[in-house]
Image 1 (cartoon, helix red, strand yellow):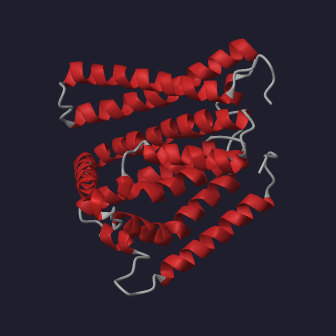
Image 2: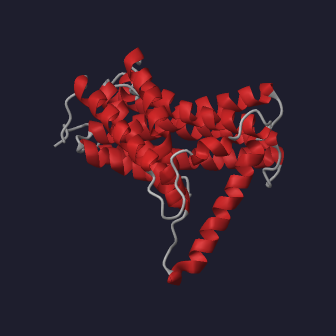
Image 3: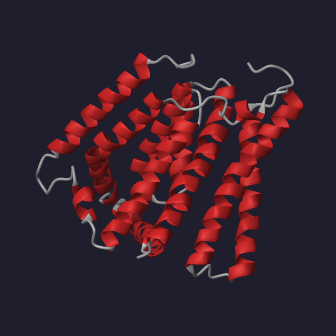
Length: 297
């Protein structure tokens, strides 16, 4: 049971959701007024990304933290999981996991993209795929540039700022609220990971994003701070921007990286299997050789 007089984790999450939704409407209206309702043009897209991360994701958590400081004397940094700095070891591990997990994640991405709904839901599947194709086309157009300066700006906005905004909201905000309410660790991590993946509205990319969300959640709870998952998330997003830029400008063939770990029809994806095993071992060692806070299992 939670202490009397303290804001419950459910109320915290509802407040975060309500504030985020209201601010999302504000951002949408502001961008529409300035750039037009079509949201066309890179300036409109970059402005939307910046405002969404600052106002829709970061601001609600900050407001909640200020409320808890006023009502319960809880420091803002505690609510936002920013009382500790990330360690070199934790950063090294998230980089290592990104590298060794790449073939396994590529296989999972390919598998998820190849999923089909039952025949009775064929029309629904068609709509979902059309929506995802449209979103992918917009993303590809946004990331396609020949300017190193624009690429650096995209890394900052799509990589760093988005990584920070989403981790502060989903991990420090939602997961942090459930943790404060003594919700069981695994339930909290996977519930927030599910919300994180579902809110992107991309069914054919749901499972890779679900695993990423769970990994970020476990990292935050284990390390006791949100900075390490921010770094992990920013690394993932930033490298997508960088590899897309290098591919579109013919410095590398990104298809080689994206196909690493996949296998043809009837073939066993041995590299993906080895990648998954090594990734599991690295994560197990990381989680068990450094004791973080004590959580209910």
